[in-house]
Image (cartoon, rainbow, N blue to C red; front, side, top):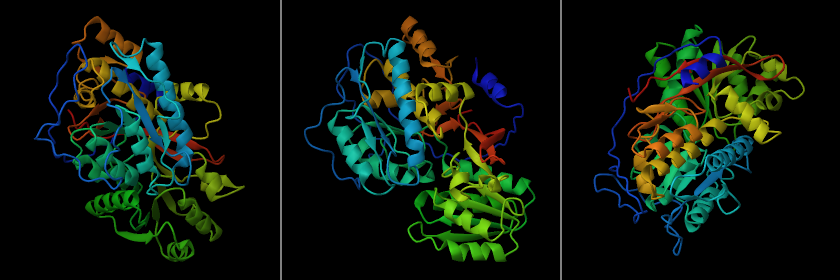
Length: 453
């Protein structure tokens, strides 16, 4: 079934919003396909190398990534705060993807390493340094590609180390706009949209609702600052008066901010941050400020099924009407993921993590090698412009029949495809709202502009 058909089945109403995004083109490596795995392909002089990494230099004595075995590692949030609610789904999704690749006969001409303790690493609290330790361990293990990290601050720290050592990175959740133009040697990709795209979506929603006096409450964390800047800029372009209130996530002063919000005639409030936002919303609810009397919107950094219970313990229905966008996932994929790993409380970015593994595996199949540089060259090729296929088995079957086949993998997260900057060509958002029973319910779909059209 095509992606378009799956989207139509997912929801009866499809709302289309076009966001214009200016892209700065970065040159990526040249393509090629041989039989035996070659030495690691050098990065062309025309591609900017990675800058010095906050994680330090690559470890000495690590295994060469080119050994005839595709080895994928993961860096996902399993402990700490903010994003740890998503870690179990990301882990399950990557494991299910490796299982699906294996079930379809693996990667033609290559071995496939299983995921395990040596290649599954915890990013911990964003910015804590745990990601650097994870990156070092994965380099030592000889990984060809890394799925993760999730937090933008962690991807910003890790990409110089990982791409500087010649490894492919595919983040399923990092959205910092600056990552689009990172000097990564053409090796950093993401299956999540950048903040400029998500910011335009949220701003359009706020404006469409007729808000004329809006407060944007944002953490000073880099992801939140970047996204809130995009929202504010777009709202100003729509002539919507906007006030920005900031807080330090380590010392948030929520009582003061809640007092300012409750005492001012804002008709719309946009929250940008992580799960700490629950404390601010709880304070507002105690003052009688609710989505019933003030329109409230949130960023994907905390819009999880568990958020309503965190913000209003015992009475999560008080958040009914609180809205925002979350990354779309094919409903059939979500059911598969829940069957694969029972007890998952939240599935956010699971589809994006799954697609990262599948896309890397298909790129390796098309390249005929586990050389990361040649995998990076093939990632845009196997995800757009060719014969469409919706799962690994169907796509790799086309490559087995004819290795020169141009395939277009449309994944669990949508059309996929990659721009020259490694961003998804087009993303699909799910407009969602909390209901009286505290669950996050789907309201409609929104599409970004196709930057590869």
